[in-house]
Structure formats: C-alpha cells, structure tokens
Amino acid sequence: PTLSRFEVLRVLDLSACNLRKSSSLQHNLKGVGHLIHLRYLGLSGTKISKLPAEIGNLQFLEVLDLGRNYELDELHSTLWKLRRLIYLNVFSKVVPTPGVLQNLTSIEVLRGILVSLNIIAQELGNLAKLRELQIRFKDGSLDLYEGFVKSLCNLHHIEILIIGNNSEETSFELMDLLGEHWVPPVHLRQFVSVMPSQLSALRGWIKRDPSHLSNLSELIL
Image: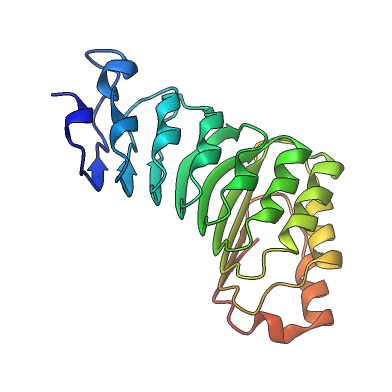
C-alpha cells in the first residue's frame, strides 16, 4: 500500500532498506508528504540520491536521519519549511541549498553538513538552539572561516563541536581565528578538529578565560 494510507503515522523508519533496488525513489516514498503527523523519518542507508519535494509538507517532523546515503549530495530547498525539526543527520558531502538552514530555528543537532559557501556559514549563526554541530569544509577559504567563526559566536548552547575539512591543503587559519575570536561556551563537552591545526586556539582559550573549558571532557586536535 502507498504511504499516504497511513494517515496517523508518527514514526517511519526505513533505515537500511534499499529504496533504489527494485523501483524508483518516487514510487518508494510516494505519498510521504501526506503523513502530516510524522515526527520521525529514518532514511539512513537507503541508497537514495535525492529527497522528494513533498518532504517539506511534514510540518511536525522533529527527526530526519539521512546518514550513510553516499549518493545524496544536496538538501532539497523545501526543507526550509520544517520549522520544528530538532535533529538532522546527513552524509558529510551534503551541501544545503542557500536559505534552508537559516529557517531551521528549532534544530538542536546538526550532523554532516558540507560548508562550501560563505552564505551557508553565515546561516549557521541563526541556529541559536544548536547543542551539537558536526560539519566539514570544502576548501580553506579565509572568508568561509571568518563567516563560520562569526556564526559560532552566536551559538551559546554548543556542547559538541566536530570540524572536518575535505581539502588536502594545509591551513591553520580556522584554528587561529577560533583562538582569537571565539570563547567556548561553558557547556562545551567535546571539541574535535580533524583539520590541520596548531595549539594556538587552545592557548588562546586558556589565556582569555580558562573557566570556559571546565566541562570539556574530550579534546581532539
């Protein structure tokens, strides 16, 4: 039966189902936009390469898990309608359409976003409720790093921050900027940077106000 028949469904978990194996994505997820009461949608490891536009109809959706979909490289522009979304997990090469992130103002956990444009870095600053942020940068642009650090200064509830880089070029600019311009919130428990880095940021944080690191239990540089 089509998904549209399950009108009062709250949870739909299709994780690890091969939605590409026997028929098209449009057939497998046809009618998902009619599940207006849906709170949880699990599509991790389903081998999808794009999201249907009707995902934007799920006004009450709180959790959207798109992890381990290695062919998915873009978030559909209709996701900006998901104003109640709390948790979004994607594979680390997914690029959000400009204008999507800035509207997800309820988001608390954001995993796997690839930041390739300065406008995307700036939009992160609107997500004031973020507690966990896992992102990767596509390149080592100084403008991109500056935009990100400026946004990060607005995220006062961050507890987990994990940063990666898709570029092979060595760059210390982001860590330097963090040391100079960002004071970690006292809630910060985990900081991971898998980018080429120096200890300048850590020295900067200790010198400015070491009390802000009092809850830090995991530090990986």
